[in-house]
Image (cartoon, rainbow, N blue to C red; front, side, top):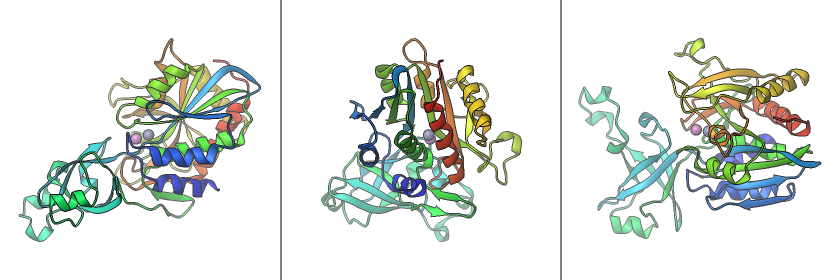
Length: 352
Ligand code: CO
Ligand code: ZN
């Protein structure tokens, strides 16, 4: 399967935080003949071990399986649903969206309803509708009927979005954060001959606080950690270049530091040797890359590097437009280049 087809399959699969099993099944299937062992831990992380020529130093590469989405919070007597958010979602992206509710009886489709413009008063037209004023219409006539269709409190909800192709090798779809990381990690595990043992860890619950990476890094206690994720690339109108210097299509980004806006607290400062090794490798192999300081967000590598006695870690990411919308845009070229860079990295000697 090409990287495009793999990304399409993973992107269109449902898997909000805590409900990643469909994604996990696809990955298990893709990798079963290509790694030495595959295990699911108690939180749902999928841990794939690929042995190298020697055991040490061990390398953990993490990519998270979960996507941002919603969860059923209440079914009212007329059969309309209220929901909570799983992960960082701007309310204004939700109105009018088509959703899939994953029930015990299968998928039930719905739409996030809103008052039509005709009924809005002048001042209402200028206001943002908060998510707790929204509801989901599944076509049910009553609570009892909604329950008959299989809908229950706690059912996960994903937004309906097929992957589409834009010009110049760009693709657009939901959950590229972080299914593109999953696709890249699958390719690296399939096609590399590691120098030493690699733990390919497809993590759960990143979007609600790096939970899967926290426990898997603790149990594996690797010598080196790398997270593959997306990074914000706002190389488009209405954002000035200095606010978002990384650009789509100019190569994967090698992270220097990330964390909260204004302080870089709560994030990662990449291990200098590891970061320099990745840069040196990209230069030597003539793989395009960008170096980045990312304000406003973090990744699984943050949880990994604070595990046990401290683990030298770095992030490799794919520049992505409209991150955490349900129509993210990235370049397949960047993804292919990251596969190349990471494959070369696992095949070379590196000691932290
Ligand atoms: Co995210
Ligand atoms: Zn992510």
